[in-house]
Amino acid sequence: MPHPAPSTPLFSAQHLSKRFGANTVVDDLSFDIAPGECLGVIGPNGAGKTTTVRMCLGLTAPDGGSISALGLHMPRDALAIKAQIGVVTQLDTLDPDFNCEENLLVYGRYFGMKDRDIQKRIPALLEFASLTSKAKAKPGELSGGMKRRLSLARALVNDPKLLLLDEPTTGLDPQARHLMWERLQALLQQGKSILLTTHFMDEAERLCSRLLVLDHGKKIAEGKPRDLIAQHLEPDVVEVFGVGALAVRDGPLRALAARVEVSGETVFFYTDQASALLQALAAYPQLRTLHRPANLEDLFLKLTGRQIREDA
View 1 (cartoon, rainbow, N blue to C red):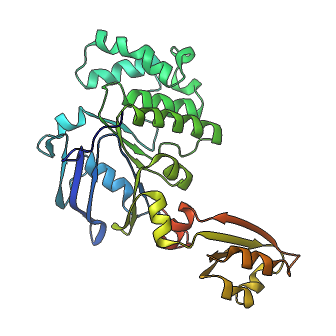
View 2 (cartoon, helix red, strand yellow):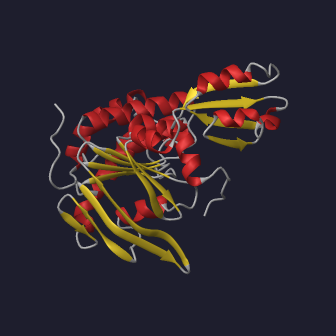
View 3 (cartoon, helix red, strand yellow):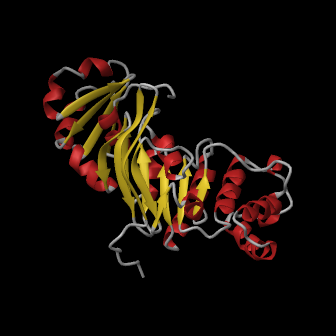
């Protein structure tokens, strides 16, 4: 049975701001996370995602605003809050000198857990991560996907109510990503809450019940994925590519689209007249087309732009 919505959120950040010199990295950002909810934070490089996560963990002090979690307040109750939070960072922080079991054991000690209590949890955590057969293997012997699953298992050693995952599937192949998604879905079904930053729009759409879109440190959109797509985009996209594709951008086909964008050699027609547009494109047999519904990637590109940004 789903949990009824509580009157107070599990986690709340209000009016957060953070500056580094003259650069405002997070600008008056507010959001809540409810029990059993996955809140996704998406945005280009330099949008403020990682700084936001660091403030939520008490690793970076905000210049303004407040953070409360589980009835406690940062920074006053930082240790008590961290005791109920699990973290998976972008970078691998596994200890290379310890095997899988030992990594879980040592991490549990950081929370003041007794060895016998941690050892009771280890078999189930390894099974959850599909690493039972690798219990005695050191991280250097594991694939990238195995390391990420071990990091997730380690983040669960203290049975946290909230998980903060900063781009947890970056660098994984498609099979490893799908296995990680399966594990995260299982955690949500157990009633855990997740704050997830990601560059993968399919990941955000698959896992997140609600999305926060950041750009230049500001919240520029918030809502359920499908609601945001319906609010900001036309329902259909026709991608046109091939020899001469760019030449049709400003031709008569444009009248059949609400919006036209170009990325590389592909022209994107955003439209609610897809059938008429496809019929007109039949007059251009040298062109290739792809007709699909609008998705989160289209939303992301509309709100934040198609220009690639370097890491900030």
